[in-house]
Length: 204
Image (cartoon, rainbow, N blue to C red; front, side, top):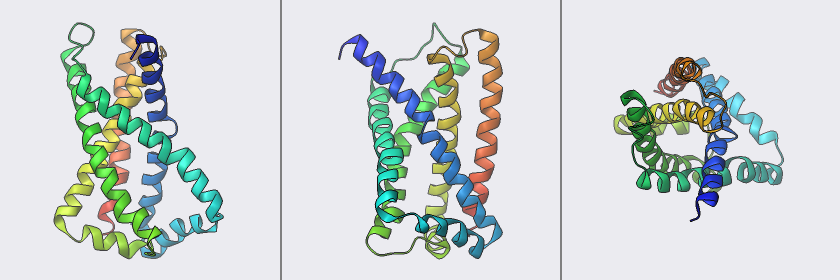
């Protein structure tokens, strides 16, 4: 792959990780958080999606979610297995974040594939995605732990990916601005993690 083409692919990979994949993750976690209000609150919130015409919903899911997600995931795996540490450019802390970004990315490919199988594919086969379905899944302590790990991996990957996006797109160029965004993205990670973990525990 030429350097010019790889540069463009990496920019697209970075962009799609924030828009629309990152925005969808925040929306998805917020929707799941309605489970804190109980079974009826969750079912009412998720039931709103059933009001969208099936054909339109299918187009939205593929164009806005699945295609960007698959590109980001598969190209991300390629990046993870061809990456080298940036010891000269970034600090030891940033190199740890760089490594964790690749590790969580590979783990998320497995987690998201399994999550889609347990929910979207089951729905396509006739199952109803509602409160009791998720409750049955996380009733297994192993699956509960797996989902919590998946949520934390996803929120870290988004927050740290947002920091990398701002740097790679030239938005935060100075050390000062990058340091500020380290704190901001850390707050994003904490908030989304609390929302996501509280949501999944609400099904227990």
